[in-house]
Length: 180
Image (tube, rainbow, N blue to C red; front, top):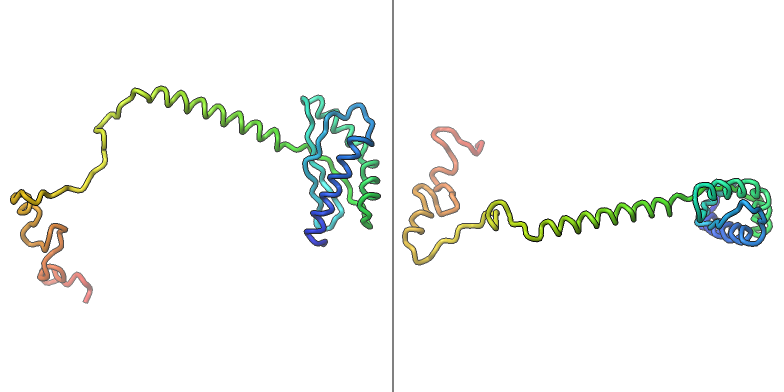
């Protein structure tokens, strides 16, 4: 098991070597516009997975995958020379779906924004079905109105919050509700 920092450094170096070799060293006509996006090296530095994207359609992607598979040995030997590690990792090429997934998410977000804009347009002149403010508000007692004060305090309570007097707090009839 190698140091994770060493594995990251090796992955960066492999990405640079493979990208430069694809640009200048591999002369396969099937190879399209390939971009190396990421390289991940296993913790034991034996396997390296190279993620790539291809500009174009499905046919270009398939042709580039075949070209990368045929150039695997050449690329591995160049990685071994450039990195100087004892055991050169085997290279596995995987098409990176991240850009495709990001494009799909962007399309979904644009559809949601268009629907939100239509909804805002529909709601522009709409009014609520019920009252303007449907939430309950605390009752405000007017200080000048003597009838309001009498209604707020009922007989048998301490104040308007509904607390019982001292004689009713602990027991109901002969039963003690406090558990003592």
